[in-house]
Length: 91
Image (cartoon, rainbow, N blue to C red):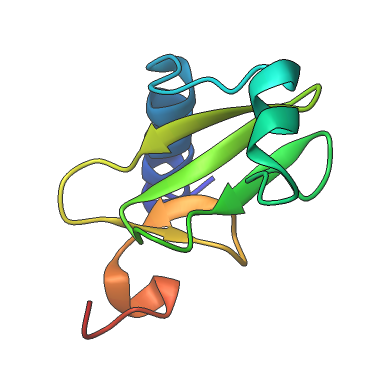
C-alpha cells in the first residue's frame, strides 16, 4: 500500500471514528419528510449543502461528518480528498 493510500485510509478512519456531529432518528427523519439525507439505509453520501462534509448513514440514521481542514468529500472514492480530486476545484 502506498503512503498516499495509507494517508487516505487514515483520513477516512479518522473522520469516521470522530463520532457523530448530528444524528437524525427515525422519528425526526419521518417528521422532516422525504428530504432525508440517507438515500439508502447504509453508506457514505455527499452533503449537497457543504462540500467539506458528508453523511454517514447507518441503519437509516444520518450522522453528519466533517472532513479535515481544506479537504472535500469525494463522492466517487467515498473519502475526504483534495478539492480538485473531489470535483470541487473552485469551492
